Amino acid sequence: MEQTLVILKPDAISRRLCGEIVGRFERKGLRIVKMRMFEITPELSKVHYADHIDKPFYPELEEYITSGSVVAIILEGEESISVVRKMIGATNGIEAELGTIRGDFSMSKRQNLVHASDSKESAKREIEIFFKEH
Image (cartoon, rainbow, N blue to C red):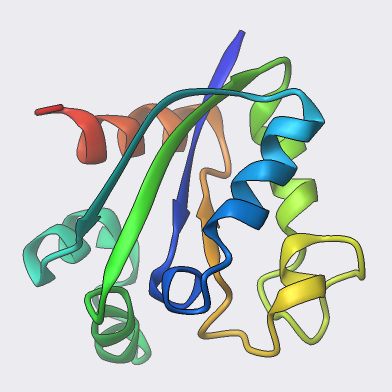
């Protein structure tokens, strides 16, 4: 079984969409291995988004991801990485297909509700970042 990491971002929390989003993953047949709610610090943001630190949009990204609580979830299932990526939809909620999480609930590229690992390597790295001490 493959594992992937999903983060429900501050807008998912503030809009009270956690149950809806997690329910979609469970109804698809993915299994929750671990889940935790916490706040991402600026330091943790820099570790997680290391590839983006030098990009002009990074300060806004850090401000957003540290603006409130998040929920990190390890999901498990066959081909969970590709399944979850299809379920969440395109990064920009306006362009995301209806029926996807972003297509149904997001109207923004910046506040797009969820993060999901995009490869086995990313999943392993991100799970270590967010669950190493838990």
